[in-house]
Image (cartoon, rainbow, N blue to C red; front, top):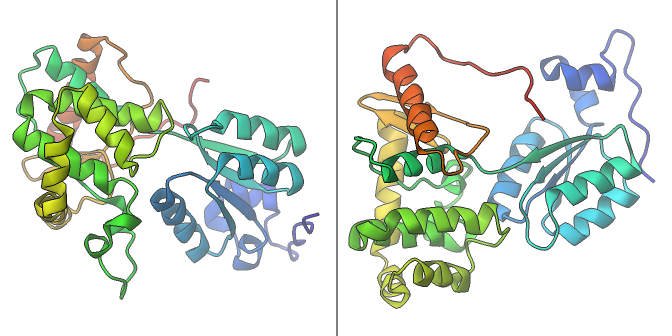
Amino acid sequence: MANPLAQPERGSPTTSEALRDPLSIPSEVKASIRVLVVDDERTLRESCASVLQMDGYNVTLVGRGEEALETVKRRKFDVILVDLYMSQISGLEILQAALGAYKDTIVVVMTGNPSVTSSIEALRAGAPWTVRFVPFSLAQVHVAEGEPDIWTRPQDDTGLLAMQAAVVVREQFPDRFFDVHEALFALRHDEGKHLEDAGEVRRVLTASGVDADKVFREIEGGEPLDRVRREHTAAAEDHEVWGVPTFVEGEAAVFVRLMERPRGDAELARRTIERVVGLLTEFPELNEFKHTSLKR
């Protein structure tokens, strides 16, 4: 059984107050707040945990859905961060199990961003834009000072194999790029499969009409990894990119998070992206715009 939360000293915020106002949390209260991070992508799981641990929270990591189900049933957590799409067991199942065991737990369900999907659907429908899709490694962003770059240990970035494949397709099979990009997105976020699984990436390439053997020969030669490194570094240095997806227009760049995919509505997709780019280029004074609540 988990220990009860530490009682705050006189004048300190209670745990519930602290969770509502994170900036007010004293270090001793942070250490008592139990956070569970559940994601079967190691890079994202460890990056998220690293940030929370550096801020002083008591963090537990789980990488498998079955283990997460058992964990939330036998241990109480104050906050659970869980990926919606995982292999075998979904984040919603874990949410239900967690709340069934401890109804006061705060559960945050995370999922992929549909911004790129909107861009592709609009381009397919003939949107008159010139767009270049640039690879970016979140694992490299979270490399600590003194640690080797992710480019020297690509097996530690769960998305890097798919990025290399996508770069080869972009350069050598440009007419298949959108198909491959969407299929890789679906592989991870709809099917709950792993982007580091070479067999799954091969399956996507073949189903999209791309010669998978040729793509993997290029990857084995090392040039795609070097290209990903160069383009990532340029984005980080030239535009201070730190997350994905980021839209870049001229010298301006903005990180964007949309909550819904266009799901075949090309006009909605076009209008959405034009609004984003319009705000980026025509309203540079706007730095942060975030809804305080979302429709469920």
